[in-house]
Image (tube, rainbow, N blue to C red; front, top):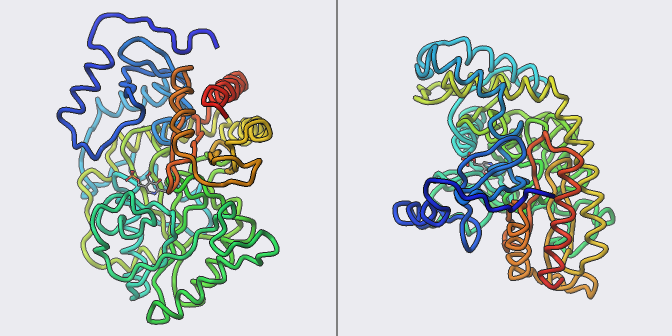
Length: 442
Ligand SMILES: Cc1ncc(COP(=O)(O)O)c(C=O)c1O
């Protein structure tokens, strides 16, 4: 682990100065991680560096976004080339970068998703997808999930099943929140598989009792990201989608976190064998360049009759970055690497669970693994322990490891390194987490 956390201060502003300036001028609601925020100055591959010269192993990738590593040379070269050629036109003019990317996404996506629309973020993609489902079905009511996260606009907030991200009361009528497939904290107090997927079945009663008896869509993240990497049990997703289709709704699959190889398959939905009608994506698509996309079956895409422009959507530079990112994922076999390294990561986290009573649950797929921190799992006390979570989080940072945090109670560590992660990095992360849990007293 030589080098992590080493303080090599050179010229320029300090970490504290950069953090103070951001704090002074940015919205206070846009909170940053850590007691003393890590102001990042540069990054290469798996590592980032702060303004005091400390380096960190990055196991969060800017919220699961830096898929092929910081300052990836192929992505940078494509971006530079595109910048010098054409920087902006809007969706009003066809360009080769937008056409090529749409073609590539259609080829990569589950069968039948033949049309693409580009925008600038996951929020906007979800907003577009829901509007599209409503225009296609003529139904306004939408089923979303408790613990789900859809973004930060008015509609996306209403879809989000987490009060932490809902600053105002629900502004979009007709969103119904089904129970999440949260086995560790089963809303029905049952256990899988003897539960017979009660939480999916319950969606039928939700529709029968809280809607007009027909709905426009269900929106599902194959793994609930912000919710704390809640991973549905086998069979849940198919049953949930079947119920909604029975009542006229389409299936919107939110791949914003799970897409582009993150879970060890190209799409999170590839683990389920269910075909989406509409799919949204962002984050890992372009290694950090702003881009969101919606893919839809052609008749669904055709149902949007009103005008539909996006000034920055399909920006040629972001599209070039996405094409390069996908190119690297393919040429370096990174989906396979995510599966292989994900398995090693998971084994190590399971071993930590056996050792540390604060780890209640380890869950996820591929390079999307969460550990839920509780008061004492060994004594069956599953009270969410935010204090210990924060302590482990700070201790890991001190030792040079950045991970994320999430979950309704803020007690889930989200571990999601770039897909280029190697065996040595995974071993280092295990070692640091082990030491951090011990330092936190658990
Ligand atoms: C599953 C999911 N959907 C949508 C969004 C919103 O994406 P963005 O922040 O790009 O608007 C997020 C962001 O974290 C997300 O995790």
